Length: 302
Image (cartoon, rainbow, N blue to C red; front, side, top):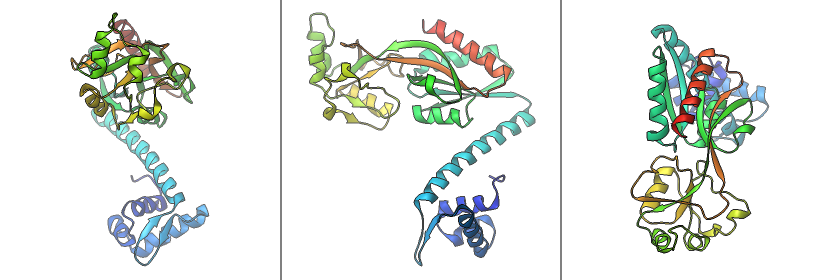
């Protein structure tokens, strides 16, 4: 990333390799020059960024914070430079749309992309799939022009504006052949009860699956919650017959025959499907694309 000043470039390289000699070799400068740039940076900031011993170099707490923040900035600048270069060299408009990774490919992502490509033939659409926190942060950082998210807190996102596409009640999802599914099918109405759910652990996915925390969920035994790293892992566990989760029916995999989806036996929370952009977005083209996208998804998901 050539636009960062020399001190920050030296800092990021050293933070990556944790060796003054290796950093100097990668930067094509002397080791003394790296030492000087780091010393000047620490002097300017008034805090140590590295712990140096005769055997190794490590980052201080302040150094780790600075590394993470400048990597984020570097990534945003690189992305902006790439967009400018592509638009100039290839003479096209590129619009980047981020989708929440768990949203259905068949019902949301692929139909939306097909519609946009047919309506805006002079635009190249770059589609990115992220988990919730990453999706939101990349929008904040300006890496996405539009994002399609599933959440409830979108009206509070700073410097962002959103449009509600659809509000879905969460449903109970379990394995089609799981012990819980057998209990559900044995009920007179074929629906789950609170007592059924109390006997089975709930699977939780950080950030992209909302479990709820209000009194309507208080009967779910929280000490029985199983934490898994992502949606794909959770669906494997559920399809294999372990527990259940509360999800929007618009998640990817909801049509899997190995899963059983049922109305929740309680006052359920909702997941909003929304289109969001930054308030500093001034491109008339992007705003037109978002309007078409919202209109299309409202009709498609109705």
